[in-house]
Length: 129
Image (cartoon, rainbow, N blue to C red; front, side, top):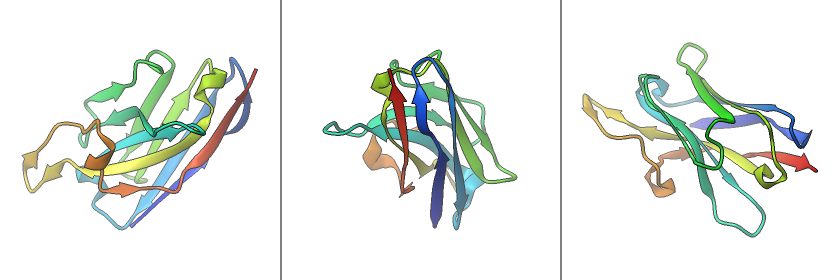
């Protein structure tokens, strides 16, 4: 199983960034996908998630209205676009996968980190003021 996050880097406040997560080794189409982030000295926090059918999304209040999560089951990727970036968005961003459709038994989009089955290695986003 691999989740490879890319994108991010150094961005000026007010700017935008696009993160992408390429996956392999699991049945992507049955998994809810999410982005989490962890700033230095802080706990990992939920950013956004999309359900297995690409019909439902959830966003943290801190990014709502500025972030868009999307998935492509053909390319097995999940993207996160963030606009109007703030210095408080500076963090390492991780993509994660949760088996949401387990043989027809469908759970809710998980909003707790421990509920996710697979994690990527993270990509740094630094927002300068």
